[in-house]
Image (tube, rainbow, N blue to C red; front, side):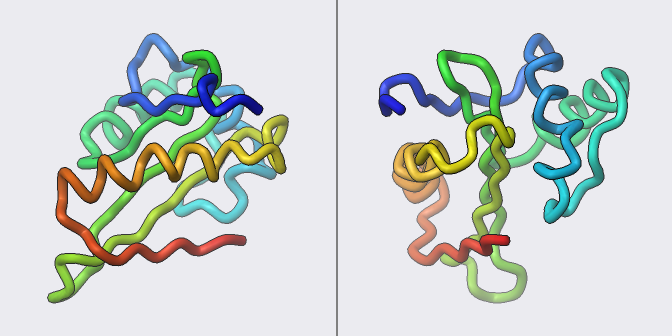
Length: 124
């Protein structure tokens, strides 16, 4: 997969159908903190209420089509320089190095915006 085809961007309502393709797949959402999206209406609600307002949740895009997400959230407690990274990508795109490419795009942006110096990534 060419790195130039991978990009990150904020979620937008116009991408709801692309979001629904991977967010409705139970094999993708199995280990996530949120349930599998069941309908277009539920997808719209999730994008409006969760994805867009999130301080740093970006859509992983292949040729500007959403195929997953990456998010960063601060560590709870007193360690304000540490953050957790979460991600998911559509099962059609597994084992192609897409998340690695997305991480390489995300980490410098997050460090610049929030001054984190430690990240934790949990892989299932």
